[in-house]
Length: 273
Image (tube, rainbow, N blue to C red; front, side, top):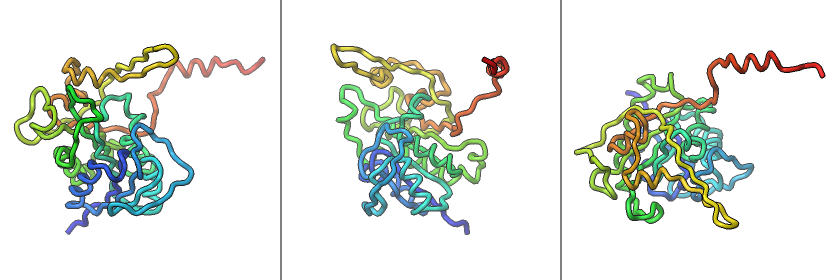
């Protein structure tokens, strides 16, 4: 009989968040789960790290006064040294588009795991809001049902299927169950399907000056709430807006292909004054 996989579970919303509690409950049915998560909300900190963090036992896991990257490093070194997978989430809010990959604490925890040679899954929940501010949307544990279902499936099958022979980590974004919150334009009847996607290249950041201040706003979210955003089929955002679970297979090292133009510049670089 196969042993259950060892999973190090973290997030960026904090160890008390409903998303990580829902994911721990679901994953514990099929895996041995160790929770090492931030003591407080660490959203949008990217791969920021600390020098010293304080440890506290809380909610059956370990809370650190640090970032998601801190939790992965400390988790792999001290609390769960040989996991089969690191899972980060489930985040309250989607992490869609290539531009969010470096900003998101949820995704950054998966990237940190990849640099340690451990495959990882970042799981997030798309919270569709219309006339309610995102901060005021009531997101409960039950809303994470699709995200938990998809993450459990991937934890059970991705390694043996050879997924991580080609990808370092998976960025998973799930819709809320049909009928919850503000449903998608075309809600799926029954469990959401899963689609393999690429991060969208759409970018809509604005900076507007008002006297001595500048307001920075990501217009993507407003466009999505208004239903006024077109996305190419095959992108992560298109899949989630269509009521599907988006899974983007990604790699961590930031490298490019061979660059002949840059080779030419290096050859022409003057070495004599």
